[in-house]
Amino acid sequence: MRLGVSAALVDGRFVSGDVEVADGTITGYGLASRNGRGIAAPGFVDLQVNGFGGVDLLEADADGFRKAGDALLESGVTSYLPTFITGPEEHLLLALRELPRADGGPSILGVHLEGPFLASTRLGTHPPAWRRDPDPALLERLIGAGPVRLVTLAPELPGAEELIDLLQLRGITVSCGHTDATADEADAAFDRGIRTVTHLFNAMRPLRHRDPGLVGAALAREDVVVQIIVDGIHLADETAKVVWRAAAGRVALVTDAIAGAGAVGADGAYSLGGLEVSVRDGVARGPDGVLAGSLLTMIEAVRNLHSLGVPLEDALTAATAVPARVIAEPNAGRLAVGLPADLIVLDDSLEIERVLLGGEARVVA
Image (tube, rainbow, N blue to C red; front, side, top):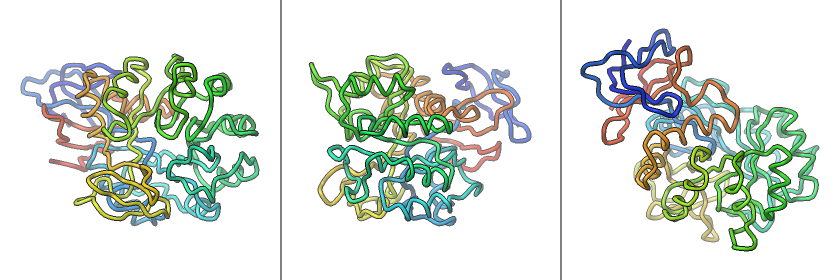
C-alpha cells in the first residue's frame, strides 16, 4: 500500500517521494509519486500524559485507557507514557499493577512517575501530603509493581544519588524536575548520568544571572534533552525561542496533558491524579491557582513551535525522535524501512489527515 504523500520525515529531514507500507511495517520511502499530497511523519511520542479525552489515567480502568487512547490517536500520538503524579503509595501501586499491556490503541511504552521524590518548595500542584524524601525501599516497591520507564525527581535531595544509581541500573530513565537544584547540583546529577529535564522552567529554581540553577545548567550543556510545554501558557513565546536557540536538536515537546485535553468543551472540573482541577478559558489550575497540567495536544505543540520560526522538520522531530531518544525507545518516533508503520499524514495546513497504527488507518479526516 502506498500512502500517496509527496514527502516523508526521515532522520530529521524531508525526503521527497511516497511511502510504502506492507504487513504493518514500512517497506519503502522516497518512492516515485507524481501526484503525492501531504507529508508522512512518525507518530508522535508523548512522555507526559496525565490524562486525555475526559479520562484521568491514574484513576482509569481498561475502558478508560481505550477511550483516552482513541482520543490520543486523533491528535497524532501513537506511543506515550501515562504519567502518575505524586499520590498515596497504595494508589500508585494499584495503577501500576493494573496498567493495560496492549489494548489496540497507541503503544504504552511504560509509566512516567512524576514524583513522589520532589522538592517541597517546587511541588507545583503535587499534593504535599504525599511527597517523600528519597526512599530506596519505596522506589523498589513502585518499580516492582509495573513497567516504570521514566522517573522525575529532585536531584538535590539527600539520598537522591542512591535512587539515581538504582534507576539507571534498572534501565529506567531519570529526569530532573520539581526541583530547587542549583547549577552545581544539577551538573553533578548530569555527570552522574541524568540526561533530561522535565518541563524546563516550570516548577524549578528560576534562571538568574548569577544563580542559573537547573535551567542554566541544562541549556549550557550539549548532552541534556530539555522537555518543554509549548502551549503559550507554561512558557512565554520569547522563552521558548531562547530554549530553541540554546538547545536546538535536544528539545523534546511534551503536553503534560490532563483529562480535559482532547475533550469537547473542555472548560469545567477534572481530576488530576485524584486532585480536582478547574479548567477555564483553556487553562488548568489547582485549588490554589497553580497551573495543573495543560490542555495541549501534540499536534498543537508542533504547530506552536513551528510558528515561532522553528523549521517544520525540526518541530516534528521534537515530537518524535527526540522524546523517543530520551527513553531509549528504538522503534518509536522514526520512519525507517522495517519499523512498524506508526505514522501520521499531515496536509499543507498541518492538519492531521490520517493516523496509521501498525499500518492500519485508525484516523481518517
